[in-house]
Image (tube, rainbow, N blue to C red; front, side, top):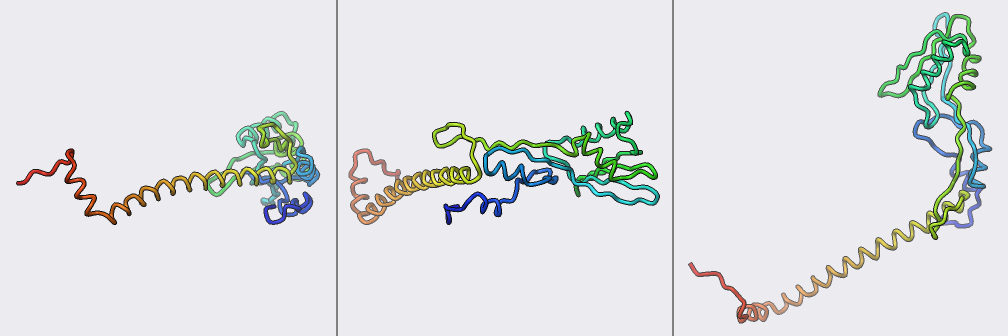
Length: 212
């Protein structure tokens, strides 16, 4: 944007394809992202990352990432409740095998159950799939709340950064000038060191160290 202020939002979208989230997950579709970037408002669908693994005579669903702001313990608890109430059938066990290496929720299925069907129902009835609203709302230079599109947001941020850097440089310049003034005085004193020492010795307030 600094090098080419005429960049369009479509060109910016190619550089910033989508938002990132600290708990990862997958964004389903791009319509919500494009709407948010072009209008400042949009709704995206976030899905957990999972895979179906064959284990001997049955299948397992392994969840390695969950949507943003979803609590893992509550998610597992809701899965267990749905299985207990038979709203989602086919689950025989749910284990949390997460470690320092990463998240790992194991959903073990009963023999003969279709893992894809169970996974679809988990997306429907649990927070393995959620909708997340985006509002690009911020204060502008006049401290007024404004809903920005992507380009306007970046333009406002660049103006803000220029102001911050300018203020910092002015502060550091004044600090350096004050230091230079002191050094200049010391330099002049060194040039006339003999006269300075004589003036100090001649001063009535001068205190000489006592002779031993």
